[in-house]
Image (cartoon, rainbow, N blue to C red):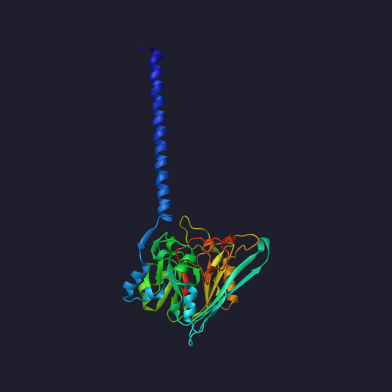
Length: 343
């Protein structure tokens, strides 16, 4: 065999080796990209249903039909239910911003100020109930788990709510103490949480210092796990603008001017809900956590707590979304709501 032929074969072998190496590198990169894409989808997109029918589960756990009684068939007419609630003992009056009966009072006000990059728009709902269990929670699609989402308005309508706000987006994470309507769903304490008691009080607490069973025994009706605490004993919590609620990948920062949802308490069974729109120049840029806390303080709240915000921030009343999410009139899906149902 000639020298030229031998050199040609050697060159071909080297080329084939390089091509195989490139192919292996490309294959490995493609494999890892596919794995990363699947893990990301599994973490943030793919539904992980732990309880497929929350109402039935709650009814079974409680040993009664209270969970089913608490929600009405989504096909029922809200206005019809309100009309039927009118009686000699309970006269109901309402309009686009107010609801009044012998057992419930809801008054919503819109506030706007500034312009351009200083524009601010927010909505305050003053709510007085007579029974702490009137303030309820509902999960998206009546299911419990991760990545199960629906619009606040959709969850509200499915539960015949007259008033609702987005909750803590429990489904974004797999920890926290989650008690809803008197039923334990999760008991992995990690952060500063919020509890609603059956006596009408509301308190901020350290999840790591207790358990779901202890809270339930103490008369807790609902818990929320997000934060941070905004007000405690009428005082703005220090350094809240530096707080990170979650540090896991995919979590958005909560510092700076943002759309916000929060809840405060003035007295037993007397709550204030605030939804601040944001990220929309000329309409509303949002507020910092300290500014948010000051809003609750100015309204006379003793304690207040921050819930999921950003595009999730939504207030619903009498069949419509009251605020303007991100200035685009478009809701973002969430995993849960706080609501009050038609009487």
